[in-house]
Length: 151
Image (cartoon, rainbow, N blue to C red; front, side, top):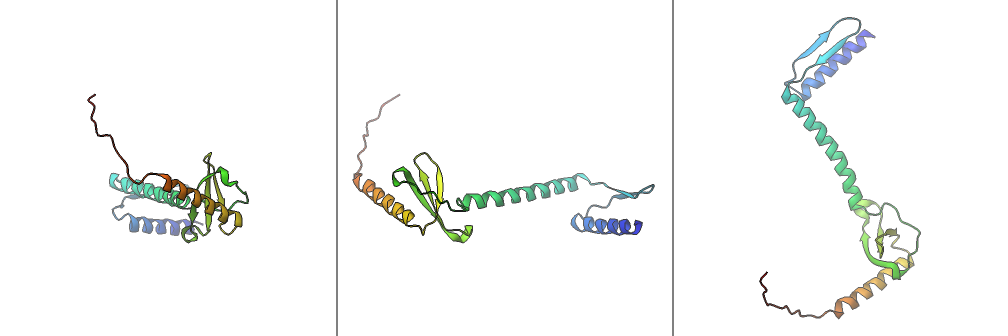
């Protein structure tokens, strides 16, 4: 059993020297059990801290970027009335592995639906028609009042 720990300590020492070349102060204590104390100088502590923070940030950014890119991770069977839908966005299957249409209701609730469903196609067509009529009703020229008031 002692040979196992000696080999483990030697491998650990090699790995530490490989990743932290300036780490040279490793003390060995003998006694009832083998114990090693690894002392790091301030520069090595900062490198270790920076490495840990970088790994943690990378892990959290990977999770948040996937969830922000992929608003829909699965589709719902809920059928929404067109009168309650405010807007929609189409999610492509390339980064998210699922193709979906995300409807936003008037209350701000987001519902993901299968774009192949008939009601989804009709709702998108209806929203596009409403959007076209809203856009065409606005005037093409705008006039501004250019009088200045002093405060």
